[in-house]
Image (cartoon, rainbow, N blue to C red; front, side, top):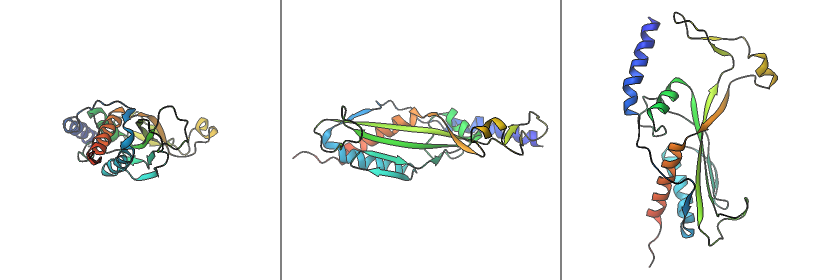
Length: 200
């Protein structure tokens, strides 16, 4: 019975994932930002991230930094959630627990980190970093049996992990999401341009 249910689930994944793909956006990252659009770009970044469902963790206008709290990656059936871009991402976030964190920075090229960015007449640089993290459960292992539960639980984490200070579940960075980064850069720039006052 469980074997049949697993087959049906995989079939649903393969059929349903066709509707999970989104157009891949091409955008420079970092991208140039005109000096007179600093404020609009900063506010656009905050707005776009909130619209996507992220909670803002840090909002530092002076240093041009916006960061978010982690947001759970949607499974393939949550087609209304726009985090995933490709079918592969949708399947991965269905089969594993994943989350994303976003870091947006607006800096003036050539200035040292920590300098006040808002007083410069130079053009700025918008950079978006989206880190993908996957939940690791040290006490869970693959049983290797198709007739029984796929996973089995250990009484305690393996000794080599305990020696490294790992005693429970944790989120492991597994890379960046360049597809979402490009989409965010494009959306932020477009919104900033729309809200920039026209010259008189």
